[in-house]
Length: 311
Image (cartoon, rainbow, N blue to C red; front, side, top):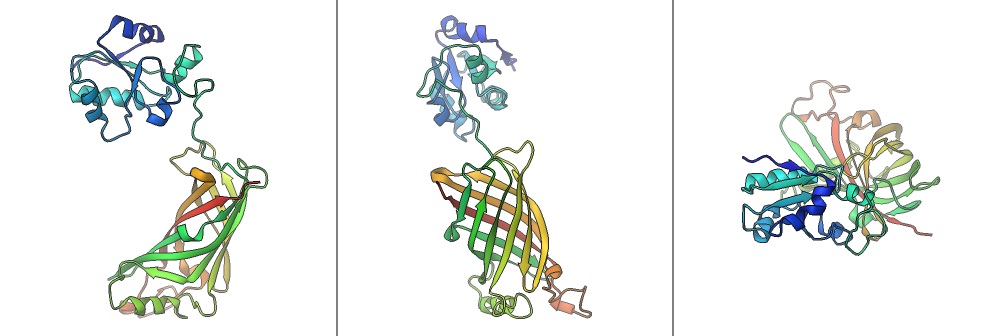
């Protein structure tokens, strides 16, 4: 298998002139290619599952000279070169410096937005205030005992996120959970569904008639150092009120900017229900439970959506 060659800016400049049958390939997504690209390059996104298929359609000759580049400071072009090598292409060059090195060298670009560098996607919110979108937001839960497991959702009826010192600073806010909105997914078509839901809403578990809501007061939503748009971005610390108990809780959260000024927040944790007085079936508080034992821990995953309150 022929070696993939790494080339310099000068070799990129000379590539199309020296290889009239060659192809300069920009492997970034099309929305970035249309903004700016090296003159003469074709855009074929390496992140698409159809990357190899599109390359075969563009370059059917496996011996044709190929030079691939991406953003620079990224694995994109190296991954593209390896995929093409495995596909059977035999003349592959790699410009690792990519678009960033080309721009820094002051060389010309083509596209609709060549005056400024393409901005990296920010993992930080864009606005100071956000209101929850209840119809899109939910919390997934899962619990089990020695024999059975159940999973479902819990409604979130209200909430806010605020960043008083600017969207790149520490935030706070609150979430209100509608305890009447408990649903069970795995028993959706089962005659036992209303029995389980009534059990969860009863005094055995969440005593929903007396405590129809639970509240999370978010005291701190602190940006994490080195956060990216594909990982955890903030550390959440707050006070969770369930039944008559309020206790501190914390976990990492992922905030994502969405179109139209919306923001999503995802977080997950293992919640020890007994610390908030939800003690049914817990061997910490009962003996001789038999088949009525229930694990102390509940897995929670919150998928929340917010709409910006623009000034």
